[in-house]
Length: 480
Image 1: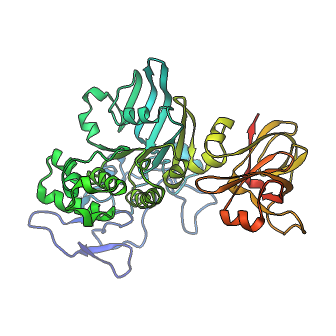
Image 2: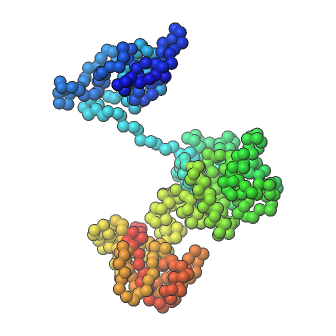
Image 3: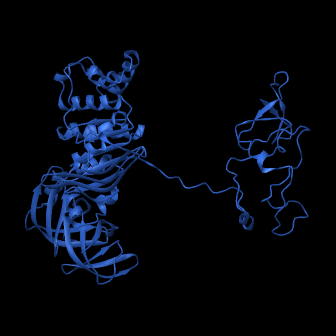
């Protein structure tokens, strides 16, 4: 330890002296200068790459000589955070851990500090050229898939698309017929991967609880790993509390409702503090209110703790609510892998668009582009679309039903930022799980999602005249 000199910038003398026959030692954190044996210096010598200071500096002048007092071999022995004996080594001066040797060409335009290398995020879990064959052909064919630390990757697709097979292979519960599963940068075979499997935890569609108490079920994995009961008990209590079932700790698992049982299964997985959490349609057996509450609670936990997660589901809403990225799996092949918003609002193909909920898909021809908006002719109407496309190109225009607003057709157009307002006739009104879908003929079939209240207030029924309004950014172009 040392006290600073009155003039600042340098350490003047040690506060705690060294023991006998040992030199005083000072720690050198970054940007803290070592003491000079003869007291603080008014001026330090400049490094070879630094410009001359003072009145005699010539324009652009740089020092090209190397002083013998700074031999490279001796200088490299001193590092930030290491003790340096007083009176030994090169003359003490400011050191920054980001200063590194540069080639001589750097004197042409010398930066004060080397730019830091861009950060490369390694995948925690990855697949390379993975194939899994069943009797009727390939069930899974994935050239490449990466799961990054702290992200929630959603895997969606229709029933039978290979989602559960993909999850079992990722979890080292099933071996692919070809390809590699890479865990922590190392290829792993499921036959001898017990250590890697223990770094993961899986929650299935069914909770699969033992005939024991809630607390015993939540601590089951810890007991299998030999964690002492005194250490396991508080961990179990903490996770039951976080998942809202702490009051049920003493209850028998067989008396739980479906939502309660799934919360216990999640607690059993998360109490292990896994490096990767694998979720195989964990909400599919729950009623809508229970599912919504559990999705909200689990999402908050996964984001707060940055748990690396792979979620397999056929429910689009679950992926939208939880996932950072989404992979669309169809017929055993990845059709799109991108940020969640891009998958749902900029699908790469008509097949993906239909699966992710784009209900209006119509053919069009690009007329031109002006002021950042592309004009597309569809069914005798001209739509303004905030997307880039070449004039004359044939495209498919996709519009999500929730992006379309319906108003009464009579009267002046209300001022808004929406660029498209099309008058049309209602041809069909159908209720669905989350909203009422109204099909409107505006020169082409356009689907809008509205509430039951809007149906009554607007008098939406077949034959009613309405105006459909949507923004230019709501329409997406897919090459035909």
